[in-house]
Length: 484
Image (cartoon, rainbow, N blue to C red; front, top):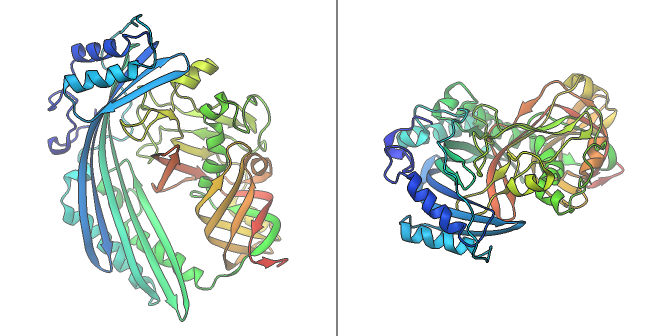
Protein backbone atom coordinates (compact mmCIF):
# COMPACT_ATOMS: atom_id res chain seq x y z
CA UNK A 1 0.00 0.00 0.00
CA UNK A 2 1.20 3.52 -0.69
CA UNK A 3 2.86 5.26 2.28
CA UNK A 4 0.66 8.36 2.35
CA UNK A 5 0.93 10.91 5.09
CA UNK A 6 -1.68 10.52 7.82
CA UNK A 7 -3.33 13.86 7.07
CA UNK A 8 -4.79 12.50 3.82
CA UNK A 9 -4.84 8.82 4.71
CA UNK A 10 -8.16 7.26 3.79
CA UNK A 11 -9.95 5.64 6.69
CA UNK A 12 -10.38 2.02 5.58
CA UNK A 13 -6.87 0.63 6.02
CA UNK A 14 -5.11 -0.53 9.18
CA UNK A 15 -4.96 2.31 11.66
CA UNK A 16 -7.58 4.30 9.76
CA UNK A 17 -10.57 6.02 11.34
CA UNK A 18 -13.05 3.56 9.79
CA UNK A 19 -11.29 0.20 9.45
CA UNK A 20 -13.50 -2.40 7.77
CA UNK A 21 -13.39 -5.64 9.70
CA UNK A 22 -13.99 -9.05 8.07
CA UNK A 23 -16.98 -9.65 10.34
CA UNK A 24 -18.71 -6.47 9.17
CA UNK A 25 -17.97 -7.24 5.52
CA UNK A 26 -19.38 -10.76 5.89
CA UNK A 27 -22.57 -9.46 7.51
CA UNK A 28 -23.14 -6.91 4.75
CA UNK A 29 -22.47 -9.40 1.95
CA UNK A 30 -24.81 -11.92 3.59
CA UNK A 31 -27.57 -9.31 3.58
CA UNK A 32 -26.82 -8.53 -0.07
CA UNK A 33 -27.17 -12.20 -1.02
CA UNK A 34 -30.12 -12.97 1.25
CA UNK A 35 -32.59 -12.94 -1.66
CA UNK A 36 -30.73 -15.33 -3.91
CA UNK A 37 -28.14 -13.27 -5.75
CA UNK A 38 -25.30 -15.09 -7.48
CA UNK A 39 -22.65 -12.57 -6.44
CA UNK A 40 -22.24 -9.38 -4.42
CA UNK A 41 -19.51 -6.85 -3.79
CA UNK A 42 -18.81 -3.89 -1.54
CA UNK A 43 -16.99 -0.85 -2.93
CA UNK A 44 -15.78 1.52 -0.23
CA UNK A 45 -14.27 4.79 -1.44
CA UNK A 46 -12.63 7.83 0.11
CA UNK A 47 -11.50 10.76 -2.02
CA UNK A 48 -9.69 13.93 -0.93
CA UNK A 49 -9.28 16.53 -3.68
CA UNK A 50 -8.06 20.05 -4.23
CA UNK A 51 -8.02 22.61 -7.06
CA UNK A 52 -6.25 25.90 -7.79
CA UNK A 53 -7.40 28.39 -10.45
CA UNK A 54 -4.86 30.91 -11.79
CA UNK A 55 -5.86 33.83 -13.99
CA UNK A 56 -4.05 36.94 -15.18
CA UNK A 57 -1.13 36.61 -12.80
CA UNK A 58 -3.21 35.89 -9.72
CA UNK A 59 -4.32 32.78 -7.85
CA UNK A 60 -8.07 33.49 -8.14
CA UNK A 61 -9.55 30.55 -6.24
CA UNK A 62 -8.58 27.57 -4.14
CA UNK A 63 -10.91 24.77 -3.15
CA UNK A 64 -11.12 21.19 -2.07
CA UNK A 65 -13.31 18.54 -0.58
CA UNK A 66 -13.71 15.03 0.73
CA UNK A 67 -16.05 12.33 -0.53
CA UNK A 68 -16.81 9.10 1.32
CA UNK A 69 -19.22 6.25 0.74
CA UNK A 70 -20.07 2.65 -0.07
CA UNK A 71 -21.60 1.12 -3.19
CA UNK A 72 -23.22 -2.33 -2.95
CA UNK A 73 -23.78 -4.43 -6.05
CA UNK A 74 -25.72 -7.67 -6.40
CA UNK A 75 -25.83 -9.74 -9.58
CA UNK A 76 -28.23 -12.50 -10.55
CA UNK A 77 -27.70 -13.76 -14.07
CA UNK A 78 -27.40 -10.70 -16.32
CA UNK A 79 -29.37 -8.48 -13.92
CA UNK A 80 -27.69 -6.06 -11.51
CA UNK A 81 -28.99 -4.36 -8.40
CA UNK A 82 -27.03 -1.38 -7.12
CA UNK A 83 -27.33 0.98 -4.18
CA UNK A 84 -24.99 3.38 -2.41
CA UNK A 85 -24.80 5.20 0.88
CA UNK A 86 -22.75 8.14 2.15
CA UNK A 87 -23.24 7.48 5.88
CA UNK A 88 -21.08 4.52 6.88
CA UNK A 89 -23.04 3.33 9.89
CA UNK A 90 -23.81 -0.37 9.89
CA UNK A 91 -27.54 0.38 9.79
CA UNK A 92 -27.22 2.53 6.65
CA UNK A 93 -24.87 0.09 4.96
CA UNK A 94 -27.26 -2.81 5.68
CA UNK A 95 -30.08 -0.78 4.13
CA UNK A 96 -28.03 -0.28 0.95
CA UNK A 97 -27.29 -4.01 0.84
CA UNK A 98 -31.00 -4.81 1.20
CA UNK A 99 -31.88 -2.40 -1.62
CA UNK A 100 -29.32 -3.92 -3.98
CA UNK A 101 -30.51 -7.42 -3.02
CA UNK A 102 -34.04 -6.69 -4.23
CA UNK A 103 -32.95 -7.43 -7.81
CA UNK A 104 -32.73 -11.13 -6.95
CA UNK A 105 -36.22 -11.60 -5.54
CA UNK A 106 -36.14 -15.03 -3.90
CA UNK A 107 -35.70 -16.45 -0.41
CA UNK A 108 -32.58 -18.47 -1.21
CA UNK A 109 -29.37 -17.09 0.32
CA UNK A 110 -26.09 -17.00 -1.57
CA UNK A 111 -22.73 -17.95 -0.08
CA UNK A 112 -20.02 -15.56 1.16
CA UNK A 113 -16.29 -16.23 1.30
CA UNK A 114 -13.96 -13.73 2.99
CA UNK A 115 -10.24 -14.01 2.25
CA UNK A 116 -7.03 -12.23 3.22
CA UNK A 117 -6.16 -8.89 1.58
CA UNK A 118 -4.57 -9.24 -1.85
CA UNK A 119 -1.03 -8.08 -2.57
CA UNK A 120 -1.09 -5.62 -5.48
CA UNK A 121 1.59 -4.19 -7.78
CA UNK A 122 2.94 -0.76 -6.81
CA UNK A 123 2.68 1.29 -10.01
CA UNK A 124 2.27 4.72 -8.45
CA UNK A 125 3.70 4.58 -4.95
CA UNK A 126 4.47 8.00 -3.47
CA UNK A 127 6.22 9.15 -0.35
CA UNK A 128 4.40 12.51 -0.36
CA UNK A 129 1.26 13.10 -2.45
CA UNK A 130 0.73 16.64 -3.68
CA UNK A 131 -2.12 17.14 -1.19
CA UNK A 132 0.49 17.08 1.58
CA UNK A 133 2.45 19.93 -0.01
CA UNK A 134 1.62 23.57 0.89
CA UNK A 135 -0.69 25.46 -1.42
CA UNK A 136 2.01 28.03 -2.16
CA UNK A 137 4.03 25.38 -4.00
CA UNK A 138 1.17 24.76 -6.44
CA UNK A 139 0.63 28.47 -6.92
CA UNK A 140 4.32 28.83 -7.80
CA UNK A 141 3.99 26.15 -10.48
CA UNK A 142 1.17 28.10 -12.11
CA UNK A 143 3.06 31.39 -11.79
CA UNK A 144 6.15 29.89 -13.44
CA UNK A 145 4.06 28.64 -16.37
CA UNK A 146 2.36 32.04 -16.69
CA UNK A 147 5.66 33.91 -16.82
CA UNK A 148 7.14 31.53 -19.38
CA UNK A 149 4.11 31.87 -21.65
CA UNK A 150 4.20 35.68 -21.52
CA UNK A 151 7.94 35.77 -22.16
CA UNK A 152 7.55 33.58 -25.25
CA UNK A 153 6.09 36.36 -27.42
CA UNK A 154 4.75 39.87 -26.86
CA UNK A 155 1.54 38.88 -28.66
CA UNK A 156 0.52 36.64 -25.74
CA UNK A 157 -2.16 38.77 -24.09
CA UNK A 158 -3.69 36.43 -21.55
CA UNK A 159 -2.67 33.32 -19.61
CA UNK A 160 -4.76 31.21 -17.27
CA UNK A 161 -4.34 27.80 -15.74
CA UNK A 162 -5.40 25.27 -13.17
CA UNK A 163 -3.92 22.63 -10.91
CA UNK A 164 -6.09 19.74 -9.75
CA UNK A 165 -5.12 16.96 -7.36
CA UNK A 166 -6.66 14.06 -5.48
CA UNK A 167 -5.96 10.97 -3.45
CA UNK A 168 -8.53 8.22 -3.88
CA UNK A 169 -8.65 5.09 -1.75
CA UNK A 170 -10.76 2.10 -2.69
CA UNK A 171 -11.52 -1.09 -0.79
CA UNK A 172 -13.26 -3.84 -2.76
CA UNK A 173 -14.65 -6.88 -0.93
CA UNK A 174 -16.48 -9.55 -2.90
CA UNK A 175 -18.63 -12.53 -2.01
CA UNK A 176 -16.31 -14.84 -3.96
CA UNK A 177 -13.29 -13.98 -1.86
CA UNK A 178 -11.48 -10.86 -3.09
CA UNK A 179 -10.31 -8.25 -0.56
CA UNK A 180 -8.44 -5.52 -2.43
CA UNK A 181 -7.20 -2.19 -1.09
CA UNK A 182 -5.53 0.53 -3.17
CA UNK A 183 -4.52 4.19 -2.83
CA UNK A 184 -4.51 6.16 -6.10
CA UNK A 185 -2.95 9.66 -6.38
CA UNK A 186 -3.68 11.87 -9.38
CA UNK A 187 -2.76 15.41 -10.42
CA UNK A 188 -2.86 17.62 -13.51
CA UNK A 189 -1.43 21.02 -14.43
CA UNK A 190 -3.19 22.81 -17.31
CA UNK A 191 -2.20 26.09 -18.99
CA UNK A 192 -3.99 28.13 -21.66
CA UNK A 193 -2.48 31.07 -23.54
CA UNK A 194 -4.23 33.62 -25.75
CA UNK A 195 -2.41 35.36 -28.61
CA UNK A 196 -3.69 38.47 -30.41
CA UNK A 197 -2.49 40.28 -33.49
CA UNK A 198 -4.76 42.99 -34.86
CA UNK A 199 -8.21 41.41 -35.11
CA UNK A 200 -6.83 37.88 -35.01
CA UNK A 201 -7.12 35.90 -31.80
CA UNK A 202 -5.98 32.31 -31.15
CA UNK A 203 -5.53 30.08 -28.12
CA UNK A 204 -3.16 27.28 -27.23
CA UNK A 205 -3.06 24.89 -24.30
CA UNK A 206 -0.80 22.34 -22.65
CA UNK A 207 -1.36 19.90 -19.79
CA UNK A 208 0.60 17.31 -17.87
CA UNK A 209 0.56 15.07 -14.85
CA UNK A 210 -0.51 11.59 -13.86
CA UNK A 211 -0.44 9.38 -10.79
CA UNK A 212 2.55 11.19 -9.38
CA UNK A 213 3.71 13.95 -7.03
CA UNK A 214 4.90 17.53 -7.45
CA UNK A 215 8.43 16.37 -8.18
CA UNK A 216 7.09 15.32 -11.59
CA UNK A 217 7.24 19.00 -12.58
CA UNK A 218 10.79 19.37 -11.28
CA UNK A 219 12.49 17.01 -13.69
CA UNK A 220 10.62 13.73 -14.22
CA UNK A 221 8.12 15.32 -16.59
CA UNK A 222 7.69 18.63 -18.33
CA UNK A 223 8.41 21.63 -16.14
CA UNK A 224 5.75 24.33 -15.71
CA UNK A 225 7.80 26.57 -18.03
CA UNK A 226 7.59 23.89 -20.74
CA UNK A 227 3.80 23.88 -20.53
CA UNK A 228 3.65 27.66 -20.59
CA UNK A 229 5.88 27.89 -23.66
CA UNK A 230 4.01 25.09 -25.42
CA UNK A 231 0.64 26.79 -24.89
CA UNK A 232 2.10 30.06 -26.17
CA UNK A 233 3.77 28.35 -29.15
CA UNK A 234 0.48 26.89 -30.34
CA UNK A 235 -1.39 30.17 -29.91
CA UNK A 236 1.27 32.12 -31.84
CA UNK A 237 1.54 29.50 -34.60
CA UNK A 238 -2.21 29.52 -35.17
CA UNK A 239 -2.25 33.30 -35.73
CA UNK A 240 -0.90 32.54 -39.21
CA UNK A 241 -3.36 29.72 -39.87
CA UNK A 242 -5.01 29.57 -43.28
CA UNK A 243 -8.27 27.96 -44.35
CA UNK A 244 -8.03 24.18 -44.37
CA UNK A 245 -8.38 22.22 -47.60
CA UNK A 246 -11.40 19.96 -47.94
CA UNK A 247 -11.70 16.53 -49.51
CA UNK A 248 -10.08 13.13 -49.28
CA UNK A 249 -6.30 13.13 -48.81
CA UNK A 250 -3.45 11.56 -46.82
CA UNK A 251 -3.28 12.53 -43.16
CA UNK A 252 -0.31 12.09 -40.84
CA UNK A 253 -1.05 11.91 -37.11
CA UNK A 254 1.59 13.20 -34.68
CA UNK A 255 2.74 10.86 -31.89
CA UNK A 256 1.20 11.05 -28.42
CA UNK A 257 -2.07 12.93 -28.09
CA UNK A 258 -3.28 11.78 -31.51
CA UNK A 259 -4.03 8.54 -29.70
CA UNK A 260 -7.29 10.19 -28.63
CA UNK A 261 -8.60 9.41 -32.12
CA UNK A 262 -7.78 5.74 -31.51
CA UNK A 263 -9.40 5.91 -28.06
CA UNK A 264 -12.66 7.36 -29.33
CA UNK A 265 -12.99 5.91 -32.82
CA UNK A 266 -11.80 2.38 -31.99
CA UNK A 267 -11.38 1.93 -28.24
CA UNK A 268 -15.00 2.35 -27.17
CA UNK A 269 -16.09 -0.17 -29.78
CA UNK A 270 -13.75 -2.70 -28.14
CA UNK A 271 -15.36 -2.41 -24.70
CA UNK A 272 -17.08 -5.70 -24.05
CA UNK A 273 -20.48 -4.43 -22.90
CA UNK A 274 -21.21 -3.11 -26.40
CA UNK A 275 -20.06 -6.41 -27.88
CA UNK A 276 -22.01 -8.52 -25.40
CA UNK A 277 -25.12 -6.65 -26.54
CA UNK A 278 -24.10 -6.87 -30.22
CA UNK A 279 -24.17 -3.10 -30.72
CA UNK A 280 -20.51 -2.52 -31.67
CA UNK A 281 -19.09 -2.66 -35.16
CA UNK A 282 -16.60 -5.20 -33.70
CA UNK A 283 -19.26 -7.56 -32.32
CA UNK A 284 -18.63 -11.22 -33.21
CA UNK A 285 -15.42 -10.43 -35.08
CA UNK A 286 -12.70 -11.86 -32.82
CA UNK A 287 -10.11 -13.53 -35.04
CA UNK A 288 -10.97 -11.37 -38.06
CA UNK A 289 -8.83 -8.73 -39.75
CA UNK A 290 -10.09 -5.36 -38.57
CA UNK A 291 -7.04 -3.15 -39.21
CA UNK A 292 -3.85 -2.82 -41.22
CA UNK A 293 -1.27 -5.55 -40.48
CA UNK A 294 0.92 -2.75 -39.10
CA UNK A 295 -1.52 -2.14 -36.22
CA UNK A 296 -1.27 -3.65 -32.76
CA UNK A 297 -3.48 -2.00 -30.12
CA UNK A 298 -3.20 -2.64 -26.38
CA UNK A 299 -4.89 -1.33 -23.28
CA UNK A 300 -2.14 -1.15 -20.66
CA UNK A 301 -2.79 -0.09 -17.04
CA UNK A 302 0.78 -0.97 -15.97
CA UNK A 303 2.59 2.18 -17.19
CA UNK A 304 4.37 3.66 -14.16
CA UNK A 305 2.54 6.76 -12.90
CA UNK A 306 0.33 6.94 -16.03
CA UNK A 307 -2.92 8.89 -15.80
CA UNK A 308 -4.92 5.79 -16.70
CA UNK A 309 -2.73 3.34 -14.79
CA UNK A 310 -4.17 1.13 -12.05
CA UNK A 311 -3.05 -1.54 -9.62
CA UNK A 312 -6.58 -2.91 -9.46
CA UNK A 313 -9.73 -2.32 -11.42
CA UNK A 314 -12.84 -1.22 -9.53
CA UNK A 315 -14.10 -4.80 -9.20
CA UNK A 316 -11.00 -6.00 -7.34
CA UNK A 317 -9.19 -7.67 -10.24
CA UNK A 318 -5.49 -6.95 -10.64
CA UNK A 319 -5.25 -4.59 -13.63
CA UNK A 320 -3.48 -6.32 -16.52
CA UNK A 321 -2.55 -5.38 -20.11
CA UNK A 322 -5.02 -6.53 -22.75
CA UNK A 323 -4.09 -7.04 -26.40
CA UNK A 324 -7.07 -5.86 -28.43
CA UNK A 325 -5.74 -5.94 -31.99
CA UNK A 326 -2.57 -7.78 -33.00
CA UNK A 327 -1.11 -7.39 -36.47
CA UNK A 328 -4.49 -6.15 -37.67
CA UNK A 329 -6.42 -9.10 -36.18
CA UNK A 330 -9.04 -8.58 -33.46
CA UNK A 331 -7.92 -10.58 -30.40
CA UNK A 332 -10.40 -9.58 -27.74
CA UNK A 333 -12.30 -6.94 -25.80
CA UNK A 334 -11.94 -5.04 -22.53
CA UNK A 335 -13.98 -6.89 -19.91
CA UNK A 336 -15.75 -6.30 -16.64
CA UNK A 337 -17.07 -9.17 -14.52
CA UNK A 338 -20.45 -9.42 -16.27
CA UNK A 339 -19.09 -9.44 -19.81
CA UNK A 340 -16.16 -11.71 -18.88
CA UNK A 341 -18.61 -14.34 -17.68
CA UNK A 342 -20.50 -14.03 -20.96
CA UNK A 343 -17.34 -14.45 -23.05
CA UNK A 344 -15.71 -17.01 -20.69
CA UNK A 345 -12.56 -14.92 -20.25
CA UNK A 346 -10.81 -13.04 -17.45
CA UNK A 347 -11.97 -9.59 -16.31
CA UNK A 348 -9.55 -6.69 -15.71
CA UNK A 349 -11.23 -3.50 -17.02
CA UNK A 350 -14.19 -2.84 -14.72
CA UNK A 351 -14.11 0.85 -13.80
CA UNK A 352 -16.47 3.34 -12.19
CA UNK A 353 -16.41 7.06 -11.52
CA UNK A 354 -17.19 6.66 -7.82
CA UNK A 355 -19.04 4.55 -5.25
CA UNK A 356 -22.26 6.07 -6.63
CA UNK A 357 -21.88 4.14 -9.89
CA UNK A 358 -21.84 0.50 -10.94
CA UNK A 359 -18.71 -0.55 -12.85
CA UNK A 360 -18.58 -1.18 -16.58
CA UNK A 361 -15.84 -2.05 -19.11
CA UNK A 362 -13.59 0.99 -19.57
CA UNK A 363 -10.21 1.86 -21.05
CA UNK A 364 -7.07 2.68 -19.02
CA UNK A 365 -4.06 3.62 -21.22
CA UNK A 366 -4.99 2.70 -24.80
CA UNK A 367 -2.02 2.59 -27.14
CA UNK A 368 -1.21 1.84 -30.78
CA UNK A 369 2.26 0.29 -30.71
CA UNK A 370 5.12 1.49 -32.91
CA UNK A 371 6.06 0.34 -36.39
CA UNK A 372 9.07 0.22 -38.74
CA UNK A 373 9.13 3.72 -40.24
CA UNK A 374 10.76 7.01 -39.29
CA UNK A 375 8.72 10.14 -38.63
CA UNK A 376 10.60 12.18 -41.27
CA UNK A 377 10.19 9.33 -43.74
CA UNK A 378 6.43 9.31 -43.16
CA UNK A 379 5.98 13.07 -43.60
CA UNK A 380 8.35 13.06 -46.57
CA UNK A 381 6.19 10.48 -48.33
CA UNK A 382 3.18 12.84 -48.56
CA UNK A 383 2.89 15.02 -51.66
CA UNK A 384 -0.07 16.98 -50.31
CA UNK A 385 -1.99 16.29 -47.13
CA UNK A 386 -2.56 17.30 -43.51
CA UNK A 387 -0.40 16.84 -40.42
CA UNK A 388 -2.64 16.51 -37.34
CA UNK A 389 -0.83 17.49 -34.14
CA UNK A 390 -3.42 18.41 -31.48
CA UNK A 391 -7.05 17.30 -31.05
CA UNK A 392 -9.85 18.99 -29.13
CA UNK A 393 -12.27 16.05 -29.17
CA UNK A 394 -14.95 14.57 -31.36
CA UNK A 395 -18.08 12.48 -31.75
CA UNK A 396 -18.27 8.75 -32.42
CA UNK A 397 -21.09 6.33 -33.25
CA UNK A 398 -20.16 3.11 -31.42
CA UNK A 399 -22.51 1.04 -33.57
CA UNK A 400 -20.81 1.72 -36.91
CA UNK A 401 -17.56 3.45 -35.91
CA UNK A 402 -18.26 6.72 -37.75
CA UNK A 403 -16.51 9.75 -36.22
CA UNK A 404 -15.87 13.47 -36.57
CA UNK A 405 -12.81 15.00 -34.83
CA UNK A 406 -11.76 18.64 -34.54
CA UNK A 407 -8.11 19.68 -34.64
CA UNK A 408 -6.67 22.54 -32.60
CA UNK A 409 -3.24 22.39 -34.24
CA UNK A 410 -2.54 21.10 -37.74
CA UNK A 411 -0.39 21.90 -40.76
CA UNK A 412 -0.46 21.51 -44.50
CA UNK A 413 2.01 19.00 -45.92
CA UNK A 414 3.38 20.00 -49.33
CA UNK A 415 6.06 18.00 -51.13
CA UNK A 416 6.98 16.16 -47.95
CA UNK A 417 7.37 19.26 -45.76
CA UNK A 418 5.18 20.98 -43.16
CA UNK A 419 4.14 24.40 -44.42
CA UNK A 420 1.15 26.55 -43.42
CA UNK A 421 -0.73 26.08 -40.15
CA UNK A 422 -4.40 25.32 -40.76
CA UNK A 423 -7.64 26.40 -39.13
CA UNK A 424 -11.09 24.87 -39.17
CA UNK A 425 -9.88 21.30 -39.70
CA UNK A 426 -12.13 18.30 -39.03
CA UNK A 427 -11.33 14.65 -39.70
CA UNK A 428 -14.33 12.61 -40.83
CA UNK A 429 -14.22 8.86 -41.15
CA UNK A 430 -14.88 5.41 -39.77
CA UNK A 431 -12.69 3.83 -37.07
CA UNK A 432 -12.18 0.37 -38.59
CA UNK A 433 -11.74 1.83 -42.08
CA UNK A 434 -9.13 4.32 -40.86
CA UNK A 435 -7.14 1.59 -39.11
CA UNK A 436 -7.23 -0.47 -42.31
CA UNK A 437 -5.74 2.52 -44.18
CA UNK A 438 -2.66 2.85 -41.95
CA UNK A 439 0.12 2.29 -44.48
CA UNK A 440 3.11 3.71 -42.54
CA UNK A 441 3.73 3.55 -38.80
CA UNK A 442 6.57 5.24 -36.92
CA UNK A 443 8.81 3.82 -34.24
CA UNK A 444 8.43 6.99 -32.11
CA UNK A 445 5.68 5.85 -29.73
CA UNK A 446 4.63 8.53 -27.22
CA UNK A 447 2.04 8.42 -24.45
CA UNK A 448 0.00 11.53 -23.65
CA UNK A 449 1.19 13.64 -20.74
CA UNK A 450 -1.64 13.16 -18.28
CA UNK A 451 -4.47 15.23 -19.72
CA UNK A 452 -7.37 13.06 -20.91
CA UNK A 453 -10.66 12.19 -19.20
CA UNK A 454 -13.09 9.71 -20.74
CA UNK A 455 -16.86 9.94 -20.51
CA UNK A 456 -19.27 7.02 -20.91
CA UNK A 457 -22.89 6.68 -19.80
CA UNK A 458 -22.54 9.72 -17.57
CA UNK A 459 -19.38 8.48 -15.82
CA UNK A 460 -15.94 10.11 -16.18
CA UNK A 461 -12.61 8.38 -15.47
CA UNK A 462 -8.98 9.43 -16.10
CA UNK A 463 -7.32 7.73 -19.07
CA UNK A 464 -4.12 7.78 -21.09
CA UNK A 465 -3.69 7.54 -24.86
CA UNK A 466 -0.64 6.95 -27.01
CA UNK A 467 0.59 6.29 -30.52
CA UNK A 468 3.59 6.80 -32.83
CA UNK A 469 3.55 8.91 -36.00
CA UNK A 470 0.85 7.40 -38.23
CA UNK A 471 0.16 7.80 -41.93
CA UNK A 472 -3.42 7.21 -43.06
CA UNK A 473 -3.45 6.74 -46.83
CA UNK A 474 -6.68 8.71 -47.25
CA UNK A 475 -9.34 10.20 -45.02
CA UNK A 476 -11.94 12.92 -45.47
CA UNK A 477 -10.75 16.31 -44.29
CA UNK A 478 -13.51 18.77 -43.55
CA UNK A 479 -12.23 22.26 -44.26
CA UNK A 480 -13.35 25.51 -45.82
CA UNK A 481 -11.11 25.63 -48.91
CA UNK A 482 -12.81 23.24 -51.30
CA UNK A 483 -10.47 21.75 -53.87
CA UNK A 484 -7.52 23.58 -52.32
